[in-house]
Each structure stands twice: as structure tokens, then as C-alpha cells.
Length: 186
Image (cartoon, rainbow, N blue to C red):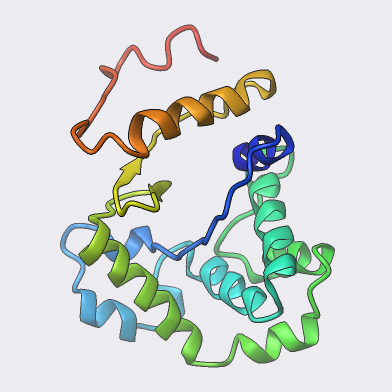
């Protein structure tokens, strides 16, 4: 949603969304065993990851609409669950995806292979530990924990974020003490 506002503000963004399964990265989780487990045991977001990859197989434009609709559905009004196929399929349908093809593609074991490839690359190449993590053209990466910027500041906030972390590889971490963050924000 934030990045959609940034695009509406006129910034051209070339975004390649990748899967990172937080539950696969929890302390004590056996990485090899995790990927072989039944989907019910792979955490609350695996359904969403699978549907997202299957949506991408229907084209970038449909995937982008589905992805945006997932964020809208998660963060405003009805808070859909990422572990409920029926709620995710409804979002997919409302996004213009071919549901018959989507349901067929969800049975393809290559979906999990593609999700794992994204996940392993995030861990091994970029040091990802949480989401959202941005990986910039120069290979630098940055995790950002943020509330949704006000619409009037969405563009400038992202521009500032890019200026600070997109090319300044000497900045390793900035953290607000917690609590009191997000004091005076809500």
C-alpha cells in the first residue's frame, strides 16, 4: 500500500517481490525438514505464498493487483487471514485471476520449490531476517519496521528511506528504543 502511494506520487519503482517465510526462519526450526512438512505445518503464511506464486504464473500485472489487494485486505477493514485458502481465493478472484487455473497450479510442487529458492536466496545472499526487507540495485539490503506513513508523506518518506539506505552501505542499523516507539504516532 505504501509503495502504491509512492508510485501514485510519480516515483518509478521496479519491484520484484520475493517470498520469505518467517516461520521457516524461526529459532529451532530444521530448514530441511520444514520444506518437506505438510503445508499445515509450514506456518501461517505458506498458503499466501503459494497463491502469490501461482498468481505470478498468470502474469505480472495480475500478480501486482493481487499483491496490492492482499495488503489492502490485511491492513484495512476486514483483516483477512493468511492461513485461510477461502479468504485468499476470494481476494484472488476479486483481483481478476483465473481461479480455475489458480487452483490447478496450486497443486504443482514447483510452487514450494520456487518459494524455497526465494527464501534461501534471501537468507544466504542478503541476510534477510524479517519483512519487509528491501534489496537495492547495488546489492545492499535494509529491513524497515514502520507504520504506514500518512498519505501526504508516503512519497517523501520513501524517498528519504531510499536516500539513506539505497546507497549508503556504511549505515548498518538505526533503531528507536522500545518502548516508547511509536510514541505520538498513533
